[in-house]
Image 1 (cartoon, rainbow, N blue to C red):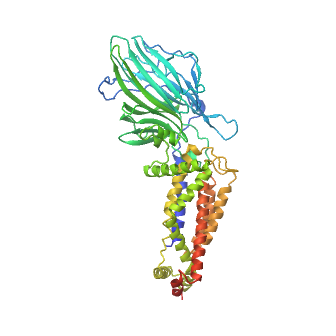
Image 2: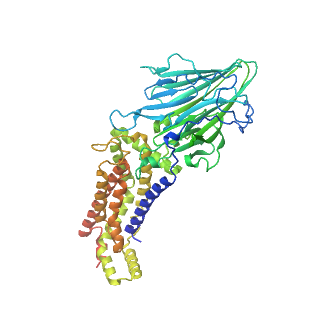
Image 3: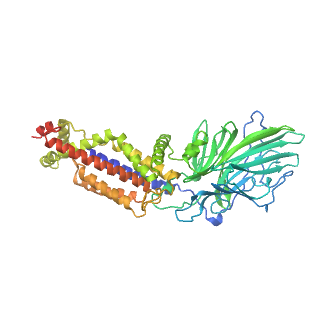
Length: 578
């Protein structure tokens, strides 16, 4: 087996992997209901089955009823106007127990001028995705996300003023038994985290018991891009959660019911709903005990998916107060901002890969790319800089590869003589070829080793570049205005075809039959078609990598030929050819 045949097998393996990913995406696409059939479904969690903990009431024996107002609950009137909060990064609509809309002001939907901001949370039927929080107890005297909380401020349109660091939005629920729950949403400048703090004050004569719950509820979104090899279709869409014991876990929407119920006792951790480039996540206190649950509801005949955290639970003595606080992330998958939260495992929300080893590699590549971006101020040039650094790191392997190719190129006339001598007797030809390799100390697979890390890096970069919101709508130069979208004029794929064709001309076809040679001749075209649909940033990487590889191969081949012509490094080989 020679190095060219090995490269051919690995190249076709790469093509097969990409096609398999495309087929798998089509096969496992989540069901998306028609807009007219989608209606928000109300869900209040069951707290049955929660383990009792010190200071926590015994678990209720049955789930609370629908979130209508219960006796003693000062329910919010359905006609009560929502509260609109605007910061430098958000425009959010609050309804007491629910954040029903969130526009990300720094992330337009498209690259066109005056494109509207990305709407991540929405209460309408076509984009239903909301963050909710409420309380449950056995007596059913508690505010839910649907009813109970009333706005305790003056103006219902709030804006973070110039120079202000944060803005607080208060809501209050008052029960007929003298228990009051004050909820405060706090928004900070430049921050995609909303702090949600609940304080329970018991002015009654009896203890009050209850659990807080926090949940994310949504209908699967219809993808904006559905073409072949669209990065959005490979990005994970579904629920994810993290626990200190079992680490990062996730479930696609179509697997909610098939993979069984989730009732996981967790201390700390987080729950989230992920999509391409953006996500929402509830992050409780790192010492808070709760139960993670998944739920699939029926919303007007369409599936609606819920992930929730029920807990912690509290027993509030008469005259006492307790408080609980959680963070709600609503925004882009910004690596630095996520790491700044200091939450264990939250970086996995940037879902570079389901496999931790590839996710770690992708994180390392992104760290390096981010440093280069800080140097160049442009993600496209940062990608080219990354190629240069990787080429330097892999130089010993690639140098051995190109030297092996140059050496094999020298013996092509000898191989042709062997083919002519043995004719159709392939077994004798292969034995003679191996004898030649052994005699001349040629390693026929020596040039294959650099191909393996190249393929691993290529696939890892695909996931990393496709998932990185930092590159979303990021331009490179001239015609490339979005490195996460395909090249609009297919210039880079054409460059790649030319580079692969030139590389083939320098690569010896030693030991290959005519059929294999014809297959190799088609490889530049095959890869050109595939790359035409991949993100421009990934194609830019491939063009830069292939271009530098071609230059290195040409220099090595020329140098080796000159050394042999001058009777230098190849002198012994020259004598052996006689």
